[in-house]
Image 1 (cartoon, rainbow, N blue to C red):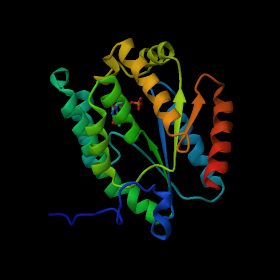
Image 2: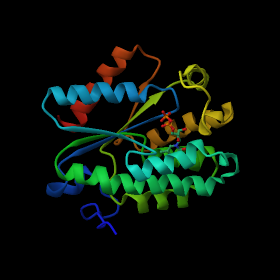
Image 3: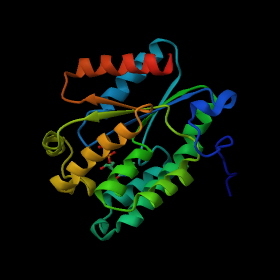
Image 4: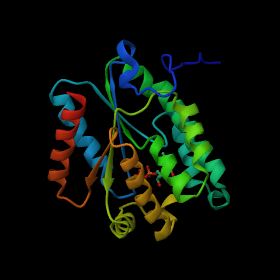
Length: 232
Ligand code: TYD
């Protein structure tokens, strides 16, 4: 059996940055509903950071590792997906995340890399906790079990109105909407509100950007925020 890789000593509660000498990297997560433009902004930020000489690793959830991508398939494209209960879904997302933290995120933070993650713990809080109505306590405990103290230094939420998000899902080039994308407007309203409530409750970690602004404007706002908060 492959030797187990563990993240460097993770004590509950502290952020990745607070990890001190052992964890010199920076973890930035991107959140928002489908079609909010996360992947475009991640690509721009990665380019910007590389230009100023930072090493960057971009990854995504669910997935980002071989095991995680297999888990992603079960969640998103399973033919029996409609029978999946919310608890199973929560645990599968957490399983993918646990692997990603140990295989990619923590080792890169130790090396001083900036890790950009397309979705992270807050997706579970919002999609499974708020939109699927699971009790928030177990969601938070499971998140904590999956990531330990590898918390984001900054979480950027791209906020778009629910109708815009649904229109963008339907316009995507790929053929049919996946299992998550087949949810109704009420589900996506809860997702949007869930992010905004979470961001208000954790203003030090969150930065909400209006996803309806011109793309270049969003890019500038994100760069200014990253510079001022993280000091790159
Ligand atoms: P993906 O195709 O990556 O969507 P997007 O491009 O919008 O990020 O699919 C991920 C889906 O999984 C998306 O609908 C959000 C959902 N999700 C959760 O419900 N909980 C989670 O913890 C995570 C990471 C994702």
